[in-house]
Image 1 (cartoon, helix red, strand yellow):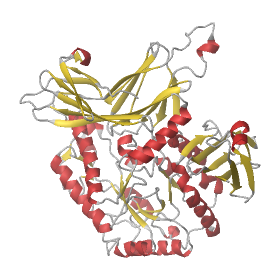
Image 2 (cartoon, helix red, strand yellow; image 1 turned 90 degrees about the vertical axis):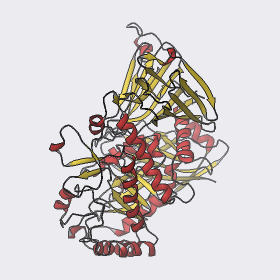
Image 3 (cartoon, rainbow, N blue to C red; image 1 turned 30 degrees about the horizontal axis):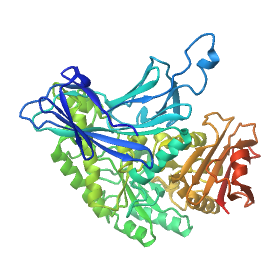
Image 4 (cartoon, rainbow, N blue to C red; image 1 turned 135 degrees about the horizontal axis):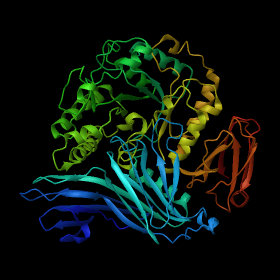
Length: 639
């Protein structure tokens, strides 16, 4: 198990050279400097999963300011790795041998076709590489998850910070040093001041990447994620998504149609536009007006009964209720109800950022949003964030206190969500944040990203990109969600969206053509595949195997396996893409017991066949799809 370790400079002196006491505690250890500054490292060790997790808590209990803290790394560990062959011109084959040391990074949610894809950086002795997020949003540009690997040995690392993090990796002859922390931290602490900084989560492995990532998925599912915990939702939702400016009476009509056609959507998702002061009544104008946020008052122009009739209908039919909020951003054109942060070019933008770093603002926003959650009897609270936070934080920082505004802001963001969950123990939170811009392990411990990329907002969103995104997201998250639609009837495309949660957009907007009776939908198809998805949804939280390397090429395939190791059942989901010349994929599914026998059912033809676990593990499984741009779904169980 990795030993928790951190480092920093104090008035320019490296951590190792500081005069200090290191004292053991019940949960880790405490470092006390000669002038009284205290850093306590609180750690958890999860031997079942091979995971070490720690958080650093800082305090200045003295009556004087601390020294200057810089080069702060909440994680500073050195992981042993065997040496690689020397880089030589004469032995290029050894130089580029594919199992040499690599740092595998994950692309962030950037509204592009390659969102959440992985890229490998090969590091030779003496080299280093760096990664950071953008604009103070932890999942924007790059994700805070890394896999360092050489052959079958490696370490998985997660940066636990929802602000502006930075990570660096230094390859030595027989090891790799990993450091990360808050990028712009360079501050002194005032007397009596205390706060936490980033957390670190590390899984060291020696039996291959697939086993490591499945141990990681089980850790997230069993320990970190709120999904499946007592009193909470067992899976992400299968939602019908609706714009908030659809009048309540029309919303009820659309849900009456959904229920009448026996479409098994389980959640009503109300997105932006339900609040004052909006008055637009077309899709085009609502799309322009929805950013007028800040009041968080139910708009009685659209919803004269304050959603009471819709709430009653949903409860009567066993449906859950989800509503969109964006409490951190306000428009100066609406009523300003709390303190806000400024930035250098403030007059150029109508957006302002609430001063969540202030404890009084934290209390105000907790009550304001909590009261609306209570009135609407919400099952799911969805929080967006469409503002670039970093420039506000840096502008607010005092001299020689860079990073303090961000630290207090992010700490209070966690407290805000923790307060909501304490008030509403059943509540589930959707971490939207501009579509995946705040996916990190701290947020996964409080929420589920139901819309992990705004790429799905694009009218020409490619199903192949969804396949890639689902494959990559499954490496790090057992539960997440995706948007789909608005058109229904394309089985290849719909199955390409299969993941833990799906939001269907078929009846999304306010214009009459989006009304239930006007939508052109084959409801027999919708019933069949909606039910198919619900029948297999639980497997997306189980062990995951990519059966073919992920590719964006339309000449390739995509194939995924989700396997429940407890009852030895699962699914194989495969896609032959539009220009693939290959009708057969020789796959190597995993997780089977050699001594067991398994029955497979083709969900399209109903045909069944039986294979032994030994045969599946040793010989693999031939997947045949005769037509281009078609899919195959096999469901299997141990006989």
